[in-house]
Amino acid sequence: MKKSRILIVDDHALLRRGLKSIIQCQKDMEVVGEAENGKVAAQQAKTLQPDLVIMDLVMPVMDGVEATRLVKAESPQSKVLILTTFGTSADISRALEAGANGAIMKDTPDDRLLSSMRRVIQCETVLASEIEHMIKNEPPPKLTKRQLEILDSLARGFTNRDIALQLGLKPSGVRVHIDAILAKLGAATRTEAIAIAFRKHMLDAI
Image (cartoon, rainbow, N blue to C red):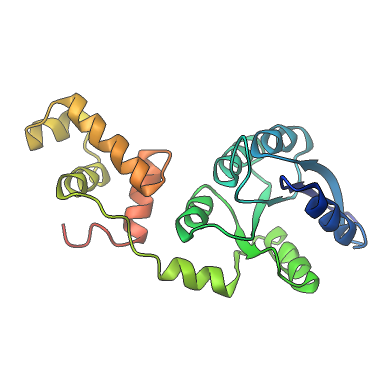
């Protein structure tokens, strides 16, 4: 039987050891690497090409959101399961937008943890009920009227120059607004910001 290759990413060595001991007892899984932060995780993902990355959300050097984005870039076939103790719904939403395939809590019982891992490896999306509830009830970020206008224009495919002419702004002013929009939405790119806006129905009233 071919074993699924697992990379464990967490800044707590004790938790990594605990996860490793659980996984190594399974006939269909093996731990091929460990990382204490997101930067190391991305490097290891490129080298190891794991089937699944178990990713902590809050870590030094590089958090789980940015690490997920880089892991997906370095090893596109790798699945990512966020395993977290805490973190805002915005953080988890950002991780999902970055490519994570699921998110569960660290206090999940071992049998459910292993089941979630197997489901994610099989291309399912897995969200713990409390995380799903938290995301569903997360209020959308508050943007100013001008920021919403610019975000709507971005969604319609307008360039910075188009938006500047349309709204009577300087292109540099448009860039400042876009930077603020990305920061408020926790998005790394315009495409990601637009996806978040549509998912949260932020442009429905525009």
